[in-house]
Length: 329
Image (cartoon, rainbow, N blue to C red):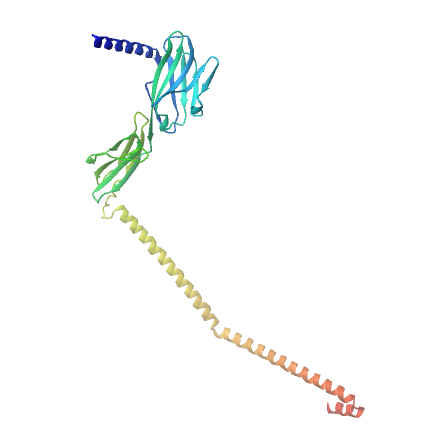
């Protein structure tokens, strides 16, 4: 009997609580990416005489006031300044913004409409924070007959990685997850496809975390180079063209070298011609005669100087000696 009464009481309390909650329209769960901002909103479905609206955050140790306002003003708790902003301060509806979301902002938040005479009408919204980095798409060869395509993404919680290859005969491996020290998880999936011989193949990698927006990367894998009718591939044709260019350049360089050598020989031959040698021979004696004449002039100048000194000395001895000296000259 007592058990039935207790069950009945709990049911009544539950219905009463659900009735109060039904008076407030709000989102039960809000998802936000790390670094972004998110918005909570609550609205009364019935008009009430509200005296004050209060926002609270539910912590393991209890509830803490985040912000509150009434007809006389608004206030944000000191621990949430710069983080929380009151966007709409109506007494029938209210909304706040959380900026630069981090993992510490995750949790449930209550909006309380303190009405008279009902008391606090409470709505609840829970924030789930996720993290998702850009996907990494890689194409590599495992051997000459197969191509390996892999796609990986890192996020929190573990992201969903979808690899799509638009062709047949593709073997997909099971995703591999690796937990990182910062709480994120890296998921990698791989596909093996046969060698491409005809057309290019499109590869898509799509990743998602929770209900957040999907991130995608697309890559085209080119087909193998086809063989031409003469048995040479396009790559071989390029190699032949490059080889021809090298041969042509070498030939031009050789021609330039030969032309330079011929020019040098002609110059040397001209210098060794008889006319050129005669000209050089004529110039050489002229220089020699001028040099000899210069030496004779210098010797005569020295003799005249000695003669002048000797004449002056003889004059000092007497006129007879001077006359003799003049006759001697």
